[in-house]
Image (cartoon, rainbow, N blue to C red; front, side):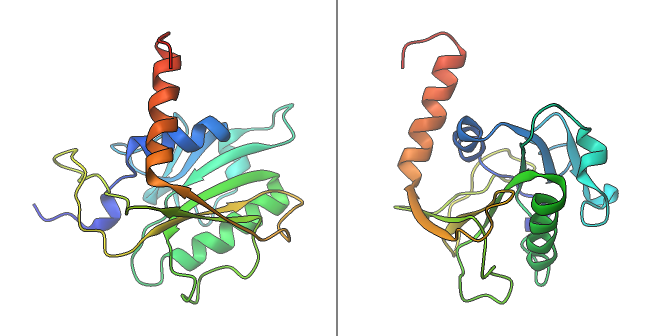
Length: 180
C-alpha cells in the first residue's frame, strides 16, 4: 500500500528530546497508530475546529505544552500555524510545531516565540507500515514554538540533529535508571 506522507510519523528521538524541555500533554495532529502523547487528536476529531482545552481539561498549571507535527500537504500547514497561535494566546498552551524549514513559505509565521532550526542533517520520518525511518527528506526541519504571553519575542535559534538524538538517548537512559 502506498501511504500518504501525512500518515508518516515523527521519529521518537525528536519527540523525546523536545519532551525533555516541554511537558507535552496533547499531540494535536496524530492518529491511533502514531500519537506521541496519551491524549491526542486525530483527523476525524478535527484539531483545527475544536478547543484543545476541552481535551486536556483545566489544571492548576498555568502553562501546558502541546506537540504538533501537522500534515505537510499543500495548504495544510497554514491553518495549523494559525491554530497554534490561537491556542497559545487564548488557552495558555505552549505549542511546539515540527515543520519544514521554509521561511520563504507563505504560512511561515512573522511572529512566534522561537524558530528553532534543526541543523547538521535532515529528519528521517517514520514509515507508517514498516516503522522504519526513511531517508531522503528534501527539506530541513524546524520547530516553531508559541509560548503564551510572549509571542512577540521571535527568537531564532538552532539545535543539531545529533544533539536531539543525544538528549533523547539520555532521557531514555535516565528513565531506565541507567547512568547517562
